[in-house]
Length: 328
Ligand SMILES: NC(=O)c1ccc[n+]([C@@H]2O[C@H](COP(=O)([O-])OP(=O)(O)OC[C@H]3O[C@@H](n4cnc5c(N)ncnc54)[C@H](O)[C@@H]3O)[C@@H](O)[C@H]2O)c1
Image 1 (cartoon, rainbow, N blue to C red):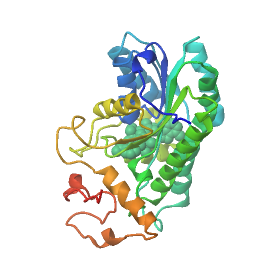
Image 2: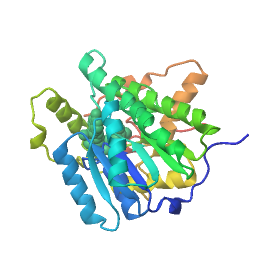
Image 3: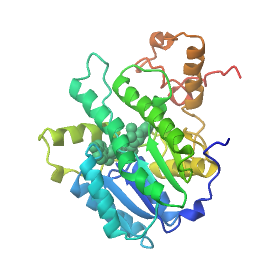
Image 4: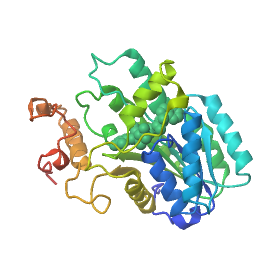
């Protein structure tokens, strides 16, 4: 009997291809592309929804990393047909190259209470965040299975996929809990058959990005209210305690190197320059303890803090509270 995951020598990825979905804005996916190209010498296939954003990101990558090949593909991960076409295009532009890593990272968020969120927001969230990951598995896992060499398959969930449901987080968290369970299942299903594929689930805490804005704008494009030709890449955001996508990517690959399945990327040194973590694992532990006791502790709903909505998640040192005390 063995565990599927173990430490990985990342040097073996040099010259192989990293595929990253949802990397056209300056968010988590972009950071992963930069690390894979710059530190690991991987060729890059970056995917996102809109031609203009994809071309701009492709050009930036080519300027930054002239030693590797970088290609941008327009691909909507909710479409199995577009993903199949993307797989074929990768074979055309990077013939004979091994796929070393696939990051199913595209996602959306609509932060409204259950009663105020629309059916359309729920459907988009589940279609992109859950079916987008499943479709990416369907498209790429057979390729990775056909290879003898080791490869990585990672889907981006969230710390929100590990903790208790929060105020205004239901559609997002339901989708991210589904991503965590789906990655656990994939790991189980491949463990004996295809042990060369290393499955991970990425659970970031707070990374500087414009996820809320890209989600809203993509919805407006789909509704015909905004033209995709007018879009500029969005990124960063104003929260100064967030990790940059580039520093975040260092933490992701440190997890992969260490063989960690649950890649919780907290806001801790050396990945940030402050001592106010999100405390994701401590908040995750609260949920697990609740489950053991068959109890849902909702006491955070009464914690009224000036200028903040009550939250069961955003309450650690990063948000002005002491780190939750663990019993272990
Ligand atoms: N930023 C954070 O703090 C944080 C925390 C936890 C999890 N996440 C997750 O990280 C992932 C990346 O988000 P981000 O924060 O970097 O924001 P981002 O907006 O930079 O990335 C999301 C990208 O997905 C793209 N996208 C949306 N729908 C798509 C579709 N149907 N097909 C292809 N691409 C699509 C968007 O255009 C966007 O570029 C998401 O899955 C998000 O849920 C982010």
